[in-house]
Length: 282
Image (cartoon, rainbow, N blue to C red; front, side, top):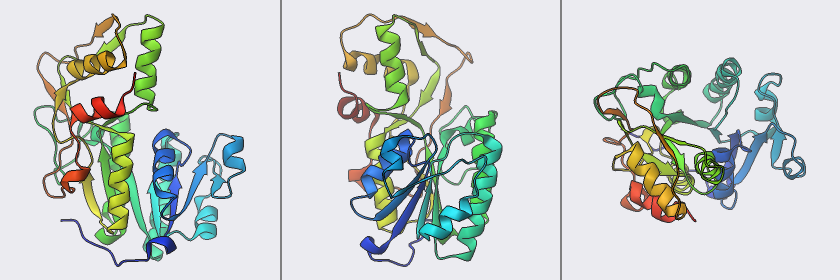
């Protein structure tokens, strides 16, 4: 079960978001910066980050994360890193070393793909991970590093597909519609989803309440991928898009992370319909 860490005054808690300029990392930064002393890393040189003293440039393949850790001395690290897999592994090895020697907790954004070898059922927090994909195996490798830490020092946050107006997936769907390109749908895939807004609220809650352990941060209900995408397109506008139906198996397969042991309060739970109705605009 999730444990609670020793409380720190909210305003005094320093948070460092690795990958703070990415889609999810930046959404988390915007949610937390009003409440905590929040810092982030960026890679691509953009003036908005260069001029922001809360952000540090970090090239994962060349720079040592210890330099930033020693400068910020965070109480909480959120990892939303993307990019070179070998560099990600090395960066997390260094972060775990820092965590083990300092009063700090690490929240790692993992993925439903850590279970993508299981097809017959949804997956729950404490089930054994198994992946057929390179991406899923990367997430498992980093998860296993965290699982060697004391539980009060780590949070594994498994996230399904993320939708929302600023999300790459919604932008891609809109691009395909405008350019009359086919939109891929997977008729046999049963999955759950979330939005960037709801996910950042959930992470804020976990940090504020000093919750640690393994959390599945997806919608409480499941839906077929094809049905979901078609509803999203209807929400965007009155179009007749081309759909490309992709069958990876003859039977229904699941890629869904549901909570059983570590459930969030009802006001922080979300249904897939709410993701469409409240987080996808025309």
